[in-house]
Length: 203
Ligand SMILES: Nc1nc2c(ncn2[C@@H]2O[C@H](COP(=O)(O)OP(=O)(O)OP(=O)(O)O)[C@@H](O)[C@H]2O)c(=O)[nH]1
Ligand SMILES: [Mg+2]
Image (cartoon, rainbow, N blue to C red; front, top):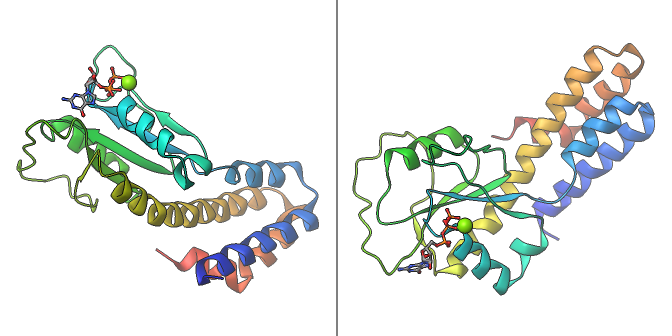
């Protein structure tokens, strides 16, 4: 078993203990929010190739499809659509022909949340060379027809996404418990658990 899996199992066990120790609906609600499958979003300007990528990944099957929803998200550089919500665990951002200011704004908005730039319609000429001033630490673009490379990146991103969810859960539990004296002790015990402290310390 990998170290990552051992740590995930130990964290899940700590969450089970705090759930059992509190019997508090507010705590249960925060924990339920942190559960569920990995949500992968696919963004991109209109016509960039989002649906094509989703169809190819769905046809390929495997972990990325089994782990949770794969959602097409509209609204990048689309004046008539509402601004996109970018809270997915993992994001594949499809660009076509070039990386525009709207693409860069999205990548910057994701900050350090796992985000891969995918070149849609990859048979078309692609001009990636506009200087990148977004300051984001995203990986280099990958061709949309290189599904193996996309899935390899996604496998690593899913681990990071799980860590992020765990960190958010710890923060949310702390906030909820601060206002609820009856549950504070159980949450403080949870937060002092070495596996929980190591999750919170990892960046
Ligand atoms: N040249 C080229 N065209 C493609 C390729 N894949 C898709 N297209 C075409 O590009 C257009 C947009 O593809 P979609 O996958 O529907 O793009 P989308 O981002 O989902 O589009 P919207 O949902 O309308 O924003 C369609 O007309 C496709 O037929 C490709 O690999 N090469
Ligand atoms: Mg589409």
